[in-house]
Image 1 (cartoon, helix red, strand yellow):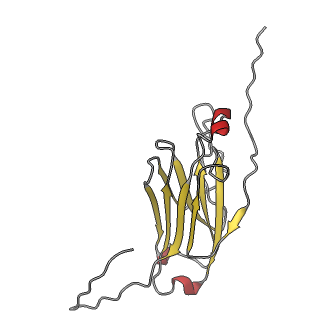
Image 2 (tube, one colour; image 1 turned 120 degrees about the vertical axis):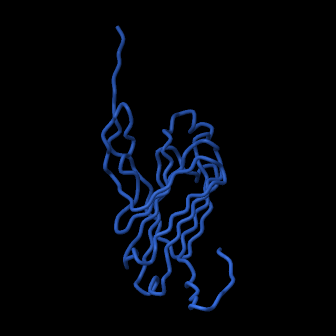
Length: 177
């Protein structure tokens, strides 16, 4: 006779949240430190009222650096760990897992493409913000064996520079960074 069974992973150990200071820049290279399938990298930082009092916005810029065609996602959330609300919801498990939430999110698949999130100063609050980078591709044995499913990326988190004041009747020149 043939034996068959189904199972669903109900809890996955996630990496610790890395507490960072702004501006923050990290490059996660391929190999052991790369983002495995169905894994998050979590980052948190504090903002005070002074950080955005002059009109500074919060910028999160993610660049994918390998595995063209495999998606990578970035999430921003105030006050709690950010992530995909849907989790692994799909045809076989159609209901959302509801483990995480996010205010802003972005998904990219192409190498050297950017996810660019901006939280305007008028929507910022003093407190703890969380940025999560997620690889939604399942991590099967073959991917583990050859690092084929591991994703590398560059993440930049910063506040914009103080805005330039332009008064009526005057002009200015400049560039955007």
